[in-house]
Image (tube, rainbow, N blue to C red; front, top):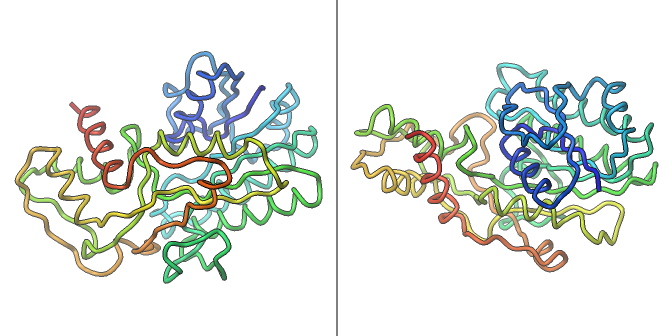
Length: 309
């Protein structure tokens, strides 16, 4: 099988590319490098620095025998919504539309799309199942992910596509250069005596290590029973921001004092409580995470600390 990975130079995309290469897949990567890093892409993978909104050029790549597309490209920074509102729409919804049109024109019909838990919004049923509604995202990132899901659904029903949509919880790992675990390590590196927590520290979410996430992504597309399948990908439990701070301090071997900025949210658009119901993918695809949320955080803290030393 020859596959295309969009966003394959990013955090999750590069780990997925390595996994597919290890399985002897022929892998092609498209990445604009707006946040990705080319040196993350294995040399054996074919690489194209390209904006997905260039439908014609994407089509030329697709016509070279691509069997499946893993679509991970998106604006990687959820917090920039108030600074550059066009970026979420351009890199999320419009890029997905461009990709779908290119796939349609070249007869490529197999898609795996990484969506997000942010499509559900806040004040939802906990744990949140895939059929929860109405979905009311509170960030542009979540809105564009939900819009892209809807567009993909329309293409599966109208143009005989097959698609797996994965709503990801917080994906963490040593290669990531964003997120609360990484931010805490960097803060302690700058000042080991004090660790500032955004919000009140009671925010509680599900975290999954990128290695577990990649297993879910590659597993979900196997043996589809329907043309359009949606799965939550997360952990069975959650962990608070305060506990994450304590774990990072412990791994950093520091006696840092934790301080708080106050408020229920860390930033505008932050969903303070998130825990996905993952029973569907566990039962239908026989996948489950190997680490719980706190274990994933602890492993990530170790990996980040090691990468910075």
